[in-house]
Structures are given as C-alpha cells and as structure tokens.
Length: 116
Length: 109
Image 1: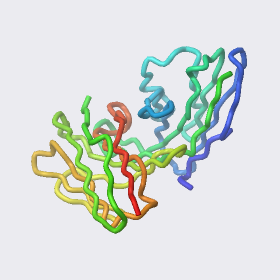
Image 2 (image 1 turned 45 degrees about the horizontal axis):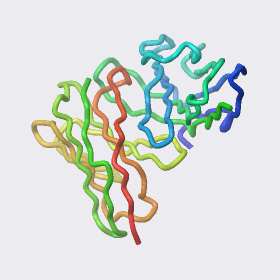
Image 3 (image 1 turned 30 degrees about the vertical axis):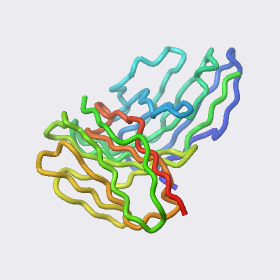
C-alpha cells in the first residue's frame, strides 16, 4: 500500500463510451502525475500537476482530458478512445519543492484499460 | 532533458550481489538520481535516491562517482522475489523526468 489509490482497477470500454479514471493520494503531496504503460513499453508521462496547476502535457491526444480539483485528487476523463489506447494507466504523487529537487514518486496500482 | 542508459536485461542467481549501472552523461547540477523497481502489472516502487557518493538503505546501495555521469544500484544477496524491472531516472519533480526501458533483472534459483 503506497498511499495512492486508483479506481477502477480494471475497465473495459467501447470506442464511443465516456469514462473517467480516478486517483486519490493520502500522503499530503502537492504534485500528481498520469502515466501510460503499454505492453512491453516504458512508462510514458502524460500529465503533471503541481499545486493543482497543469505543468506538463506530453502531446497527449485530446481524447484524454485530465482534471485536478485539489491536490489530493486527480481524474483522467476518457472519450472516443481507440484500441491502441489499451494500456495500464498509472497515477503517482510526490512532494514538489521546485525544479531540480528531489523526486520521490509514489505510484498507485494502476487501472488496466481495454478499449474494444 | 537528462537521458539515461542501462542494460536491457541481466541474469543472476539467488544469493548473489547484483550491480546495475546507469549512464547519465548530461545530468544537471541540481538533478538527483532515483531508482525504481516495477513488478508486472504494478506501479513502480521507489527504491533509493542519491545526489553524490554513496547512499544505503535497507533495500539497496547507490554508488555515484564524483563526476555524477553514472550511478550503480547494488542489490545485496538477491532472491527470486527481486525479479523485476529496475529504472534509473535523473531529474526532479516530473518536469524533466523520463522513464527509459529499464533493466529487466531475472533471478534464477
């Protein structure tokens, strides 16, 4: 148990569906992240939020829409996904103290997404 | 953007010490070096972090030479449960933080 929870753990959705992934951290951190991990590929950083402000968007398609209502919660809204979007989606949090300082991220268990 | 290079895979036997070296020639002055462990279908788990010289915790040791252009993760007396992918990262707070393919460690009985 890392102090970061994600729901749901598994999700199957059609290409026309709209769903949301939820992440919650209980560590008092002020930075949160979404990563995507496809089969046998490295983790890809998707979005970064520092103090609820989005500071990074790594050219992610608009069918992925993040939302960070407060420093403890992070959502990833999904719509009109493609089969190639099937992957493990991981949320992480850390205590941001400015650029270039320590980075110790705590990851949730992930949501296994399958797009049919 | 500091990039890291690690061996793609390594094999070891139970009870041996395993050393995984990571190259990061373009590391910035303020960057820390962080290592993570990942088991299949789970999120990465923080192992150890350092800035220079040597850091040791209950899980591993991290050796960093004076020029900081490389680092070595040392796992003492590995067991089968240490079979995982190990990632070396440099940077801080996600803005310049990239996971490479990591090193797939296989511990054999």
